[in-house]
Image (cartoon, rainbow, N blue to C red):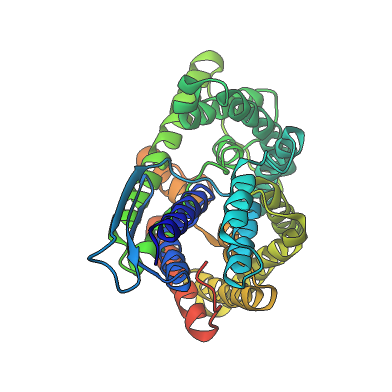
Length: 409
């Protein structure tokens, strides 16, 4: 292999790795994908992916002693962008199949990474509000809780938008959002609303709850991606603590300003609202995860499958194993999608994972331990959340055993 050819190929691999990391690809999937692509390009290499760093060693196949290239770069943790992830995967397929040459592929990759967000801010605002209201609805509380959670979620998105223009605000975004949500929720509860203020706060900041990151971290640990998995789990736990402290501080300030109001339970929502909530939450995630509209329908179906299978299985096996069967069904569904439509399974499985992840239960468990009060009635919520996490990871492991996606992403 000539020096120029090796240079162009490693340049593409490095830019591809940066792009996929930026779009939120888990470490174990990204490393497997890079190894497969390197082999297809007649390269060999060693790849180490972490949430904040990428380290590569590359050399032409069979020529390690002659040309060996080392590359290390510090990167920011990636944010989910399912649309760009799907386009990048399609680009790699076109390169391997000979439909694009390397120069054209580099130009296309640059176009994908530099394109503006696919949805306008007003649509993201609505999606953020819907996610908060839908979660409150899914918890089966009252219509007052649902409406207030929707409204406060809109205000929280205002902070997210403002944080794009202020680094100091961005650094304090999560605890500040929780504090604002708690302060407003307690204030509204003074106006003769029958609010479960703690639940409204949780619903308003549900987009920040790192249940998905915690699950991905445990999945990485399960395949012995120890560096990335440990870093991701610890980052998720620290984020959870920041959110909880912000909520506690906001409620304390509100009690000083307005005094405490005892919560009076109101009539729970009818059973059919939970299915409506799953549909609304899954639809809002299409926007929040920046998925393509043509993939959005498949993602919404993933959320419905996750919820339907998990609640049916829970009637027989209990909540934890119900989550296992829900994850198993979503994983099989995603692998079939990957084989059929030749797109990454994660594009459709993430919505189902969000419906199943117990991030809210961990937050509720922290509240129960610290304050001695339960946001919603539940027994042994800490151990239950742990079992659900393990069941979720196991479900996806077994789904890959039963149906081979034939794709590394």
